[in-house]
Image 1 (cartoon, one colour):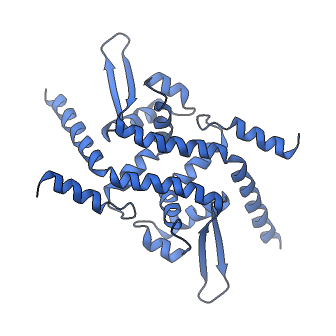
Image 2 (cartoon, each protein chain N blue to C red):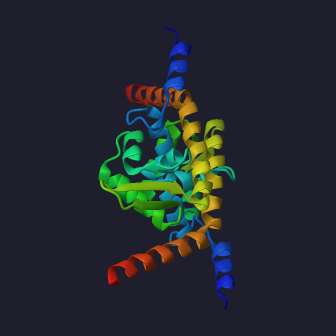
Image 3 (tube, one colour):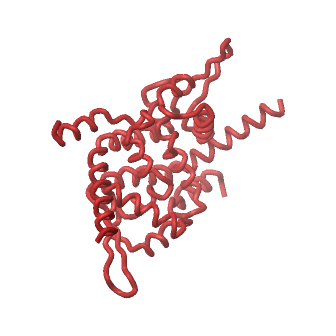
Length: 135
Length: 135
């Protein structure tokens, strides 16, 4: 079987509902807590490590480094280390990463837009639950 | 300030990059490991608990129940318990949940399509890394 046959088979067989399908890890990496935010931020263009750290509230240096390494290994992010003092490391999206970033960017904007609906739903849910307890 | 003013302010101010913004939890719930798969599965229509459990490989009863409860509380999933023996509990998407589900469904299909590219990128990355170690 040629490499292109193998690649074709992987694509046809991929199923995120199968526990051992590699597509599940692809999906988990782009939808991880920090992965989503890093991809969405890089959609605006090249960023240094320190810029990403500042832009994404609450991310630790360690988690950001791990997230970037995972995204780089998957081929979503390109890392460019410039041999200067102090070191300068720049991150950009690859074309594949841009595909992912566009989708998670849409999800992020949707989440921001729907905050009022979700907060209202949670209030209704908690009130109904409290009502059942006291009934 | 009226309730609608407050709701308007929440929407305008929402920012997933702010660590304490409620939009971040909205995003995390729809992109959680099992949340993504449950939403995508429900896009096909109503499902019983046992059907979801069977469809989504590797999910435990406890994690599925927790995921469904979180999605129900956020207003994405409607839960209908029928008073029959044995108990029958059915889950459907709300209109809000359908918005989320369409987007994560797109991400899931994209992840399946891109498995070959990601596997190839990982091989390149690991080979380059091993090369640097042995150099």
